[in-house]
Image (cartoon, rainbow, N blue to C red; front, side, top):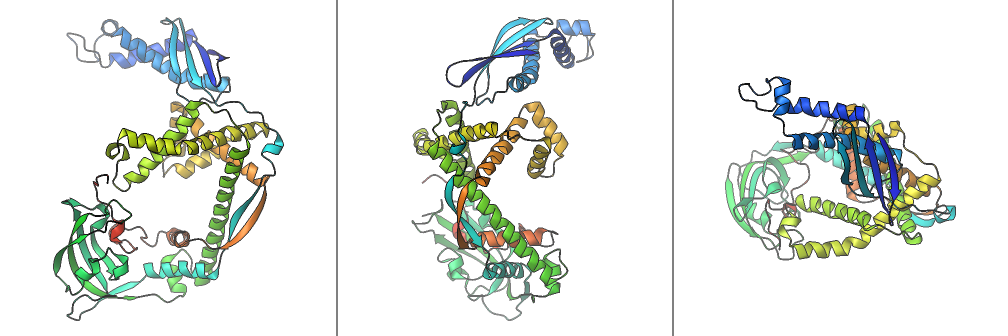
Length: 478
């Protein structure tokens, strides 16, 4: 294979790729062998006809298409690497010469990242302020309290009485809206505490007085000012009480540590929680520093952005938005009209332009500072995102599909941004530990080290079920 590049206007270039005879024959043979297995020849079972007869029965246009697909799939990534370009768009392929088994040539027109020459002063010694957390004892105590709650023991009350405010109840309940089941609103064998402020108004009032073994059905209308898709909706609940319970929290001792973590002593578990909190706080500070550094780069360095790069970033933003809404049961592309989607895209365009500019700038910094990505770094990143899959096979598949470059690109940009942060003049503003969510995450990390506690159990969720957080399965756009 031979390739050459010709640059066009702005960020457009055209690769001309010539495939050598040996490669063509190999691809042609592979395509023929695959095709004759499925061809039907009168008098023979499928795939069992003599090769000469089977070849005569092949669709030559389909065969040619298969050969070209295989050759382009293999040659295009190599041409990109040989010519050291970074395509933004998918290639626009045009076959300029096709002589089966002897000579094939095609062109691939693509938009590439624009070149950018930078002075060191443009990205070194940036000045900005970032918050830095000071882990307080109260934050550690919150994490410990969370773990105590997870290890609590619930004991049935034998007294014959109705459910009261403050009680713990072992229950089932089913919620429906317009006859459709509310996804997270239907639980079985679940322990909840009867606290009015934890639920949609009217929920706890409706279950007060229910006795063990009883089932009660009731209706609730969600307020119009609700923040979710359930606002103003009429919901039906079917509530079954299995037991009224008391809760006993464990003592803060070594036995408690063994129960909820991998440690044998309470002191070692505390050390682990403090370490994790410090590491997480440092990671958040670094992440905040990267975000601010990116903002500073985009503000101070002007980039002539190709429209295709801006659109690629904008599509990524819309895709993430769609995923976020999908978790609430809402398909924005189905429930919102074209004009609404267009308006959303217009409001997010500036954000897309900023992201695109930062990418171009970071690539220029990486080039100037000779920052590169090693195979070891790629393997480490693949291990992080593999989800238990075989990393070697995953890498092989990504190379075959040409998508390994996306992984390398992400690592390169991250390293370039870290370089900017390391060389920045940062003023740190000390603050107390951040919100409850971060503290709980640390507690979960400690508990999950040995997977001794089912923190995310589907049958027994540990967080109180708040009805206002329970989206309907198929909500309609308001």
